[in-house]
Image (tube, rainbow, N blue to C red; front, side, top):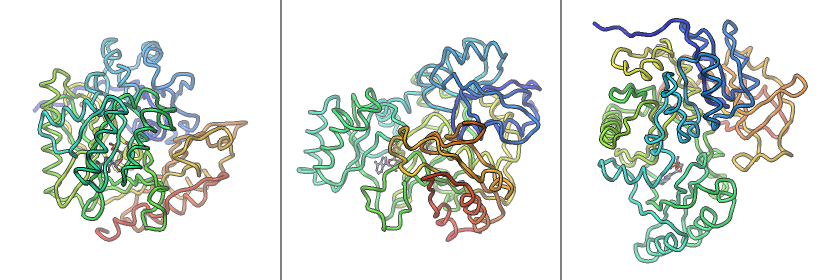
Amino acid sequence: MKTLEIPYELTVGIADGGGRGHAYANACRRSRLAKKILGFKGGDGWSEGPEDKIVQCFSNIDAADVDKIIVESLNQRVQLLIAGQEIFLANGGADKARDAGMKVLGCSRAAARLESSKVWAKWFFAKYGIPTANFETANSPEEATAIVDYWFLIKKVAALVVKADGLAEGKGVISCFSLAEARAAIRETMVAGPVKKTYPEAGKKVVIEEWIGGPGTREMSSTYFSDGDDLVEMIVGVDHKRRFAEDGKVDEKDNRNTGGMGLYAPDPEYTDDIRRQVRRIAKKIIAGMQKEACPFQGILYLGLMIRNGKVYVLEVNVRFGAPEAQGILALLESDFLELAWAAATGQLALVKPKWKKGKVSVTVTLVTGVYPSPITAEYKGFEITGIEEARALGVEILHAGTKLKDGKFVNNGGRVIDIVAVADTFREAIDLANKAAELIYWQDRDYRKDIGRRALAFAA
Ligand code: AMP
Ligand code: GLY
């Protein structure tokens, strides 16, 4: 039997600046294969983790700065580059790194269109028979308005979704429950408003699609490593996208979507039937991308909605989710770099990840109160206390948006710290994560206290 070919003593670069990148860094630290770990830009808090291997961060190099990352990676003799943030891939980072001789866990710019253009992704789904919400696309506010008028007034839909075409960090999607809301969403995305202001390019085109939600629906995501041919599925976790608990006490309009407020894994509701449907979808995507002459090598994240037992693809991301990476890598028993290297070098058929037996994880994300609104200067820079006390409980603390100021950590973004608790039961993991969350504080810190509650009804 063939065995995996992999160099010992790897130098690994991570193009990410948040909690997902820190989770990668720690997974590399736990690997027997890592010699040196570099973060672009990483974070001040990445030095916190298993002690034996040092992480060096380049705080002046952002994940979007592809050329700078390539130059520094060559200087440092990086052998494997892990793409964390989608912007690195959308900017052609994987192509350039491969041209420069590195192995990359991340797809080409052409393949990254699955995430960087929702219009392209929808076209691809339609062409390759991938189940998705019905949709139309529009190139101007006038065209988009005509579509939503038709959908609400003639087709009599109860709701629809307006999505900016380009990258908007999860903030370019607006669910609309009336014509007035839909027109406002188009204005906000395409003409003037917070989305247009922060992501001026993203809303040049929009997708208008059927709203799939309400009773009988459930959102989940599944993540695959792909080497272009073969696929390996990660454990499936359940993210909590809404800013507040969905207990009916919060006005639907105030309860906006976020990048993710927390996760539990594995998903006890992930049945064999759903797994088969999702695998079929993943295989169709891999085969379709080969046909489009942009084979998909990297991490494929499927954002899914399940309606009455049938799986629909809401979005594809071309990188691990956050907090998915945090909560899922914590359950990986086997060597992360074996998996990453195998995916980056076409050897995925030779590895089978092992997961911690009988363990579950709960990840709680601590945020600055106004998140997901932009975190302007007046909300940043508050000292964070209690990190050490929380860590002493035995949880993994990942820095998503902190920085060091005068030797102390301060908050520096919306999602600030991820707390990952691993335990034998969801009850224990929930209690542990929340206990740790309570210990960490800064002015205005907030978190969802219901992460994982749903899992209690289904499993240990
Ligand atoms: P996307 O970036 O396309 O996944 O959208 C972000 C979030 O918006 C998803 O995670 C869902 O919660 C929600 N969403 C997206 N598309 C739809 C849809 N067609 N119906 C209902 N909710 C949706
Ligand atoms: N947690 C979802 C994402 O990273 O897109």
